[in-house]
Amino acid sequence: MRILGSARPLDCGRTRMVDEPQIPQQPKGTIVAGRVLVTGGAGFIGSHMTDLLMRSGYEVRALDNLDPQVHGEKAGPPDYLKDEVELVVGDVRSTEDVRRALDGCRMLVHFAAAVGVGQSMYRIEHYTSVNSLGAAVLLEAVASGKTDVERMLVASSMSIYGEGLYECPSCGRVTPRLRPTEQLESREWEVRCPHCSRSCSPLPVPEDKPLYPTSVYAINKRDHEEMFIAVGDAYDIPTTAMRFFNVYGERQALSNPYTGVGAIFASRLLNDKPPVIFEDGEQSRDFVHVSDITRACLLALHNEEAAGRVFNVGTGKRTTIMQIARAIARELGKPEDDFIIKNQFRAGDIRHCFADVTLARDLLGFEAEVGFDDGVGELCNWVADQTAEDLVEKAVSELDDRGLTR
Ligand code: UD1
Image 1: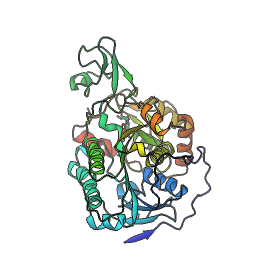
Image 2: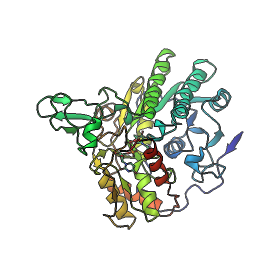
Image 3: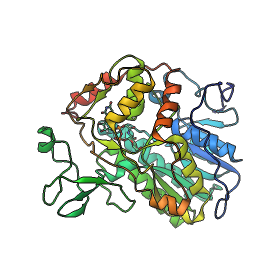
Image 4: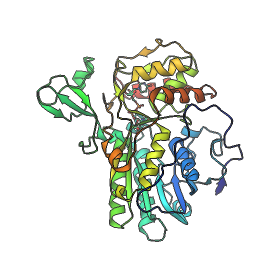
């Protein structure tokens, strides 16, 4: 089945606080012209990527299964999907759907994935099927030599690092594994040096930090990146993997309780319920606006030196979970101190991780442009006009029931 994008106007007249991302100028290297397939192109990041590709002159096709957990039970493409996008509703695990979607495409941007970290720890078969097998089906179609694909880019994730990089006052740079359960059970949240047990301070994480994925989702994402790079190398198809840090922005699936923390907090606050904060709220991430993510991807697609490489895509700045909760509450005009601090931990959660952005800056000329305040302002401006079903308690109790929060 092939559906053309919805007949809604492209821009519903909403106020934007964040400018449309600039189309990168003067790209280096060869640009592959023609049609691009974006898998997951109806989703949060994928739809922003299709918008940017179209603004840059590409014809775009999206392959998307319109997963009800993300898009709701309502059949049909999301309203934000532009008319010009050719939507193939299908599954990345179906050889037939993939062949149909790839027909005539010269670039493949693979963003389709099942994305709930916690949920991946009990829907293990589903996650590994959609993510790892889905990548295998796509790559086998490319490897068959029956497609026109000349360039590939795949979405990877900071989650493949596991715990971030740290500085120990005695041992120097250390790469700890997950915090020991006994330590977490005594509610001692900060990371200790794996060698001497002293307290450590977080450092920005470069691409060559050892990978210690701590969830099935993260293992699947490592598969994505390694499978794409290996097949790209073998068949001489320039391929790049982008390690996204914590992406936020308009079109996040607010009713999906398995999504990232920003959307979850926004959805709770919109329903006049306090955000639920794990640990003490001082854990931190690198929150990067979706327009910076898509701009980095386009820069990579346009740069032949990006072939065979992986890049962190973040801001290089660390924001605590408490800070994001307060910022979203403030922007939505809700109380800034009415939060449920669980003082419990989610199995597999890391404490701190933020990007070392040197490689993307030096090689791609990429620097994140959207500041945290502007980005959260834009997110909340959009959120304020949305309705969201608050399913967070259900999702948390699913984790509780399985002993995945303690
Ligand atoms: C997130 C994404 C992952 C993506 C990665 C990098 C999800 C579920 N996770 O992983 O797909 O690849 O960024 O872009 O989409 N927290 C709360 N309360 C909540 C929810 C979360 O306190 O209601 C805390 C968590 O315990 C954690 C932090 O917020 O300490 C971040 O959690 P989350 O948004 O799930 O992100 P990551 O696990 O970093």
